[in-house]
Length: 300
Image (tube, rainbow, N blue to C red):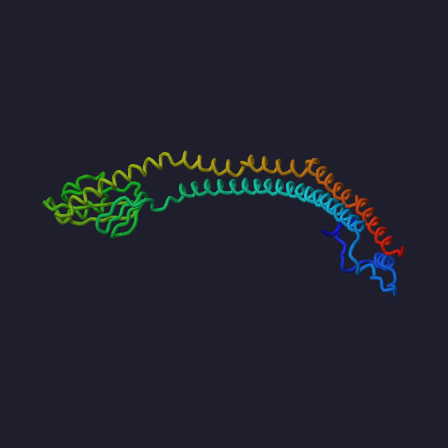
């Protein structure tokens, strides 16, 4: 394992500095010509092995202390970063929830203003009844104030509450015949025609469903002002409701302003600096090894 200096960077063993090179050269000394093996070619003595082992041990201890401090610093910073991320995510979630609430309230309000066709209730030939409108061969009209009748021409024409003058005129031309007729009126359309016997039951069912739908439409109109007012209030309340956002933003501000996080990080930074600087044992072991080697290299 490589030793770590005060800067925190591991020295490069392949590129020693000039002082270490000079020191090593001095330790080795010039090669002798008396046939004795040079220092670096001999086996290590017991004293040198012991000094080398001691250097390796204190170096490992030093690097472990530095690594422990660096891990503590890293975890401290990561913990604070995670807290900030979670708090910011909570703020974003609160804002999205508010936006969604506003959209839902606006959608409900728009549906009251423009209800559209509504659900399909029943179909009879070319007539299709929806919650809010009727499609007929003569066009499309609202369900509100619409009505239909299935009876003889004379009976239908005699009921002025069901039909307008144009329908009365059409049916009056037929007299009191026994044929069954179907008359449907909206504020925008009029449809009158004679029914085949097989369609009478279906026509009566369609007319009954139309009267029920028209009654619901009238009730909706009577309640419409209240519903519309409530929908408008719901939109305003959703737009003004900042409770969750304010709480999330306050939590984020508290985390970022909490001095304990900075103090904890600063404490670990100081621990890292102290661990890196505490290399006295390593330097002493290096000096001891150098002295042993120098002594081994000195001729007796």
